[in-house]
Image (cartoon, rainbow over all chains, first blue to last red; front, side, top):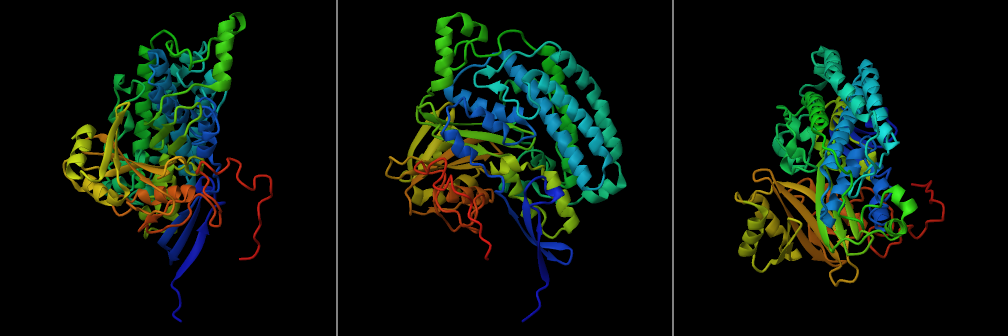
Length: 391
Length: 163
């Protein structure tokens, strides 16, 4: 029997650089990857099934548990889909606040990614800087939503509440500082020769391959494809804002890093404009009394509002029969919800299109033939969150 | 070409395969016979007037009351024309559906997930294994007749110590 040249090893599921419980089965030829197969599902909670046993409203907190680094984005994607199904108009103030929070969340998610990605590749300092800024964002979000990770603040029909006093000044203070903070991270990495050697020309993917694998988000844009849901299918009045979509050229780990850094700067620009142009008015749809619960004050003083409150909480609402797909550009890529309604108060089917799941599908193609050490760089550069992959 | 004209073009090109075109909230859905699915999908991807080069999403839906109880819904995106088109096809348990992995590699994992969740078999799939569920999982969780708690909800997990 001929001696086998390759060796099979497990990377994960308990490995610090797999960002959760991801197991990659690596077949190694010397120090190079000959074949690889990601194994997922360790975090599978059956969220899509759980949705079917709840009313449309009750399902919302489940979305927080998908990509747990960007709760607001997940809430937004789900609410947009349900609102599309119901065909209701959201007040402009709520739309702008949604944009503001989703962009804050994008910066927070990218900061978490940057810190851990650099940590994976041996640059430990970056983590302490990025977590400082991420903490500021989480505190700002906590001020409005009451939660750091699981906000459930974006609701079907608008927002849970208007923003509290002191929210806007804190956002604007943070945004003023942000560019100089990003400059700091860049000093640590962008021209760092070690960083460049670990990331340039590593795990590159061509534009054609990315499209064929369905890859979205910064990974796709690093390959030079101009596809961003915020521009392609604008939602929540993104068309009112002036921002650019950064594109890479080589599609390698370094370009993905650059794209995400510029994205953070652009998010800052969007938030700045949202602060400037923030309209006044209600934060929940006013013409949808069967969907948006009445004001707390009315519930305690007006019997009709009390009845309406209980009807919405217990029975929910019944959208028309039909199916819709709505998606947003989350920090990882295109996060979509495909909803099928049979006209009852529970969804017939909720399909989540998780960007991480589909981006991870391209990992075997990305790491074909690379060194084992570069597998870590590749996984980090896709920016996966297992909560979203396994659902 | 926008998605509405794309639907009409399909109807013209494959009159016997296209069962209907619907529009709901601005989204176009074309229902296609399962036997003709692969031919239609190949045309959608390769035609220069359509060039649906990206498979965004693939989802199964279960309608137990229907004779063909499973609906598989494909969402396509065209980078060139920036529009989306949904293709739907129906199938019954035990009737295979052609895999579209040969056209879009994105379908690989999504078909594996749909297969294990609904018990639909995709013909010519390169790697037909479970993906989210364990290999020896029994049942199809996203079918409507599968209880949300599962049949062994209150029993401890089976531990298999032998290989």
